[in-house]
Length: 434
Image 1 (tube, one colour):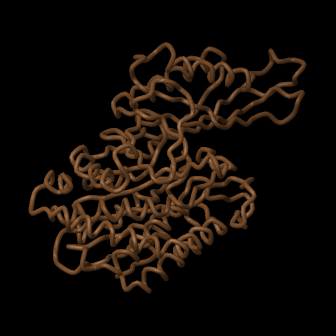
Image 2 (image 1 turned 180 degrees about the vertical axis):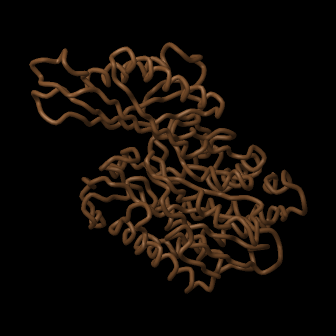
Image 3 (image 1 turned 135 degrees about the horizontal axis):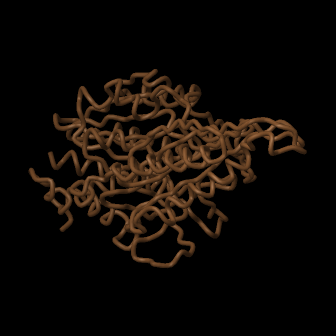
């Protein structure tokens, strides 16, 4: 059963003894590299860069990959880096993706490696993603005899927030458009994400569940949601605050619209159909004693099903038109479909899980429920079979328990070992399956 993961994908599997030897070799090398990898992670964490500003991070990545002797291409999708590692023998290609950008969040955790860029923070663990991929590149460079094919590294810019008003493409979508999934075309693509808080599939409560270093989380099939953005402008008519009847109060109309939009989920859709509509920004008005002429709203919609998503957009337009017409106001809505839902290829997941269970134990490979977050790894997984999994980063003893996208987020650095070894096993097992 040690080589079950290879048998699922056909071809000539390695003997169990060969796989065990390779696992031990990789584990030893990862342990030796670990102090240097921690320094890389802390360097990147200390110098976070926002989407499409990843100049320093990309330069660091390109330098490391060039020193390892990989074929390196820079300036992909603005600041992306793509590298190809050729193994000791001919074979298929497998891709690994790591996102590089940070978030506009002020870091509050007091650590020696805290952000030196005010108001910008690696609050989503992309510093660890990059470090794990660089560790994998170094590991496989040292042991090319274990690589039976090639590995394409996709260091991606701009995974984080895409505003509804942005007109171009960026991040994974732009990388795909620029041909990173061709020449050679991978047979599979893997991506990982740091995670502290999870909802295991075998739980029904809404309590706190941690995914710790040394643990892997996965979701077969649909992993997360279609992630969309919208920007709404509601226009009324200005008047003095003492004579509201002479104007059309855009703030009052907006308040009614916000409440009505929430009714789409609670009263107008099948309760079994997952949906989130969240208003994240609101601005309007010029002065306390003036009836506001214009209010702007910004928000996000999360769904799993594409056809259902289109129905939600129609409902939003109907509600906004009805409310504004009723009050003599008007509206504009710019709706942007951004990231499609990630679909983890069921066969690839089934074939890879034994690799993780072999390394970390079946009890530490945890099935999770799909989430409503968004991730543009989906664009890569639309081209070839993909598997996007989680590596645990929580450590209660060290006080590392905060969720992503928060100012107290951090990662147990032991998770770097988990990420490197998980990627190495997934990649090499897939290459050996031919």
